[in-house]
Length: 159
Image (cartoon, rainbow, N blue to C red):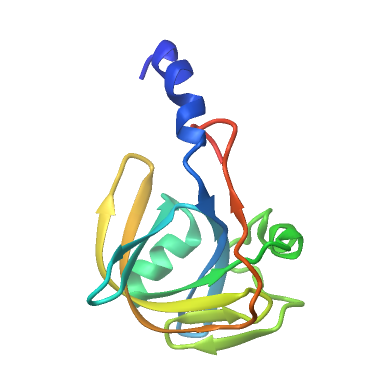
């Protein structure tokens, strides 16, 4: 991809609005979570969502092996979740220390988020630098009545 093309499309790509989420997964006695923004509902019956995970993130392999994930929806007051998950956690680091969480088969529910959706992986698409997981929603709940955090990016070529 040449620089002229990147310059031309960087800002328009960044204007695609998205929510903010904590994606979690569990496998055996291990669990982890990361911030994600590339999420979209992809079906009504059964209810289905997609979520993109950058190649090489520890959670990518965990989701592939476990076949499940939880999407925790961050509310307007997003500072706590961004501060906690912003730097990321290594595969062996405790990702949820200091947070109120509940472990489920599909992943970890972060109680400080406004809602969650538990999903069973029904497909995946390998893109250039991300894996897009297709998840059938198998559970979920509202935690409080706050509005979701929404944002755009200045540049569509980085987070």
